[in-house]
Length: 140
Image (cartoon, rainbow, N blue to C red; front, side, top):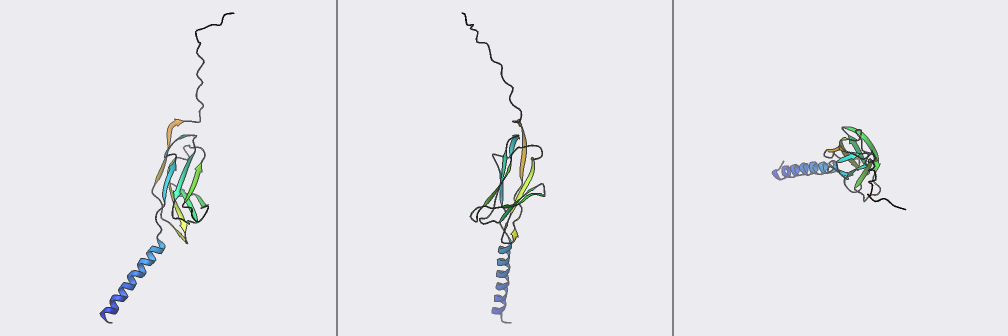
């Protein structure tokens, strides 16, 4: 084989591998919590997973186990899925990841998101403060 043919063959193999790698590899999604990752007991928290536009599904995992899947993106232009937890508790606290599905491929897992139960507890009603006497008595 001529040196030029060998060079073209090698170039074709390299390009073919690069194209195949681009087709199969999706960028990692990002994950965040609203209003933040430290939440008082009883308060709602939303986990937001962001991937590429047109993602067909998003999946939320807690500590390596699928928690929610089949969460569809509302439209092809959307890039995120929102997972609402109506009340923060010990069961909600933990380490979360997400991934998305696009063109027959699941993305890699996102970075860790750690939800922490804060010390503040909003499930308990505040103790009412008794009315203080004004010091003036009405005289009749």
